Length: 70
Image 1 (cartoon, helix red, strand yellow):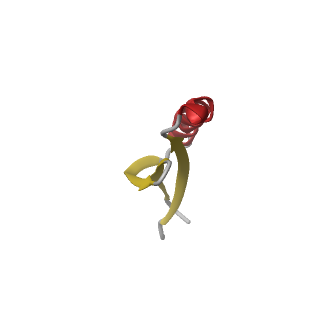
Image 2: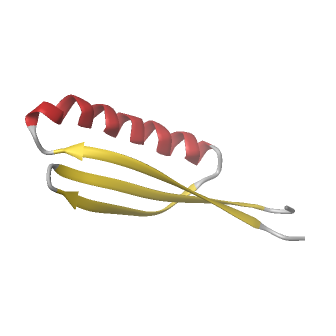
């Protein structure tokens, strides 16, 4: 019997300018919803990386789930 591990990433964009506040709030809510939905499917959060950009930052979450008896 073999195990198969599935990896996914969630990419969230955040802006530092006031004009991007609504988009940033929506993106954070979507990230929260995505993390909860994947968690309910058995995915575990492995890492979160933030990448600074000239007008904000990018958040990249890596999740994994191992399927047994693949």
